[in-house]
Image (tube, rainbow, N blue to C red):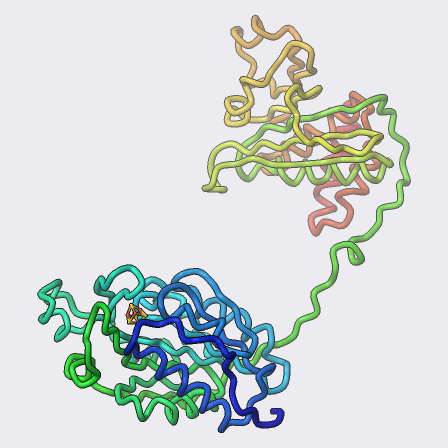
Length: 421
Ligand code: SF4
């Protein structure tokens, strides 16, 4: 902590309507920070949308302004980021409307119990948009305005306590807010202070009337230490990615694109990766990308690989040069892409008279006899490399050599290529 400051506020005039209760909590926080002796640069005030969100220009601390209902999430992120710095305190503000919208963010912050304080300015309504009720509007208040009185409000204190907040308090009396905030700010872990606030423009006009309709005051605590953030070193992809030194020669003349079409669990994606790696071992530029259903364990699995000597700036593959088709799922998926100028390597079981009549460039191969279901795509890729000489089969063996199943994969590749010889 640094030296005491006389004020944590800027010289800006409060923007609220006359009599608005938000100023009470802002002044209380200013005093609490002074008494706790925080330096303005040690405090990060986070706000979001709504009348309560007008506070950030008022504080002469670090301030961040976010989306409606998101100040707890934003604050949580900042708190995790500064967790290992000395004496930093994140204090987020939110209204009861924002708390309704961002309830999950509040519960998540409570569950994580990261060191921060959330101040909920509860005036029982959405002030900025004209006084609509919120999820924290109390039954008594709703009886007065005769709206949704049978729908109970969220009890934010109970909810955050149940979620794991270290310190959860509802305070209604204005003269208790400063001391409550001090205790909350001093709490190591997630603390929440729900403070009653007056909205003379759309809600209650006098504090005494408001105190008649708010929920009872409540303090709930957990003897739970704040969650510690471990600073994990994240390595840069640029410096940590191993550089592949080409050890094989490629006969590639110009850019070539391959589509591998199979079924889930058949290894098409892994094989595309092996091919791309093999291309790099042969000194080529390569790209790969895959497509499969959201339910990854079913249906087709299709992957594209491009080889070139030049950098590949466009990774699209409209007219592939080679197709490797090992299952019916794969065939159905890429059927519309088949064209007469490509070499279409296809498992012989999938070849029909119609397909033969449509494409004279089919090359039927007994892929399904060469390997089991899981290795069929690898066997087919090894076969095609061996036939075309696009890149040496040895480069493919090098590509699989760091895989835990390398012995099985190399056996598959050897079997296919030796048979072909
Ligand atoms: S509308 Fe209500 S909550 Fe908003 S500034 Fe005016 S009095 Fe305050």
